[in-house]
Image 1 (spheres, rainbow, N blue to C red):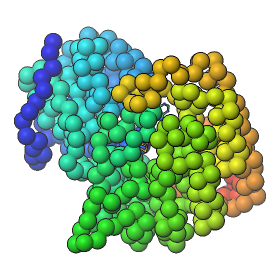
Image 2: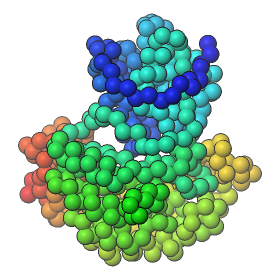
Image 3: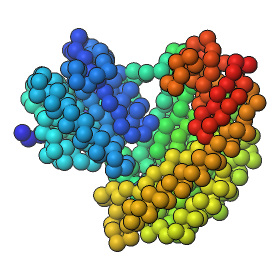
Length: 457
Ligand code: 5AD
Ligand code: SF4
């Protein structure tokens, strides 16, 4: 079975629903950008008449929105495709579509390893999913990968949560961190026009949304590529404009790059009441030598200076980070520097990753410097333990305080409780009658490193 590369022009025609009564299931791997792209894919499928169901095995169409940022994401995809082959053998009319970052990067590998896939599409053309399904149903398996986007695709979105929404402000990344595959798959930075973003937030607010998260791979670069009437609206100004939209009570964003995080953004955060006291600032490593090898553009001292700046300007700021352990050539001394920075920065939470070589990135070439697996696991464990104790201390310090929660829904841990988030993005479980999407005041009574328990206040 061979896949065909389409070269017809991209048309986004409006049309009548053609798949009414048919069902789809969608599984998303990876980051928030992918989760949001999946909401767009779901919106397009629903506009075509389809209804979502939970179990992929019973669906007429299964869409897998893939990620390639770390190795285990590949393994999960091929595992899922194996499971779907069995379902498709029993129900031959079933369609399988694979999109997202891994599809973008591994188009030929997917074709080779899983010839039962009907549609392969990339990150730059997820908005074409319905046309590609039409093509596949008529002509057989199809693959369409575009190298670059020319604009940020805007499609009807099907949100899972009524009160909270993602808003893409830019796509792509112009940095070249040596471990990271994102620039290769997501392309260069393209910002959306500020007026379009504000209008989208206004219409979300009119729809009942009270919380928005602004999304971009590198939000501090927002607006640099866009000049309108001789004026560039940069990220700090965008925060203020979104902050002026009535009805939006909470604004979050992800992710900034530490090298580009400047005072203007911290001041805009502090001065815009809706912007939450929360910052995700990815450290990656605390060793100057490794940071240089990663091409991060800052050293430990400058990173800590940014943390100090943010904490000074934004009272009660909660700080989270990403850290990679076992980058090629990382010595025990380098790792100690990472532990030192973690001690000093006192992150509220940290996402920690074991380095995984991504073919095509500069760091993946450094095979002679790859670190022994056991050594990396031991470091990963030690970093986890340190952050665990810091997370516990920072959360315990909150006990007794009264905080405002936005209720998300029933707690997954305890059916008697509901879960909500503080403005600082802490997860709190409490007993309350308040429905999802409403605000409730809670007094914090118990803490773990990862969540707190509250009582209605
Ligand atoms: N190996 C391990 N972690 C990685 N990340 C990105 N690329 C890799 C890689 N090759 C992590 C970084 C980034 C987060 C989204 O994923 O910490 O901030
Ligand atoms: Fe990857 Fe670095 Fe761009 Fe983030 S800033 S997406 S880590 S290249």
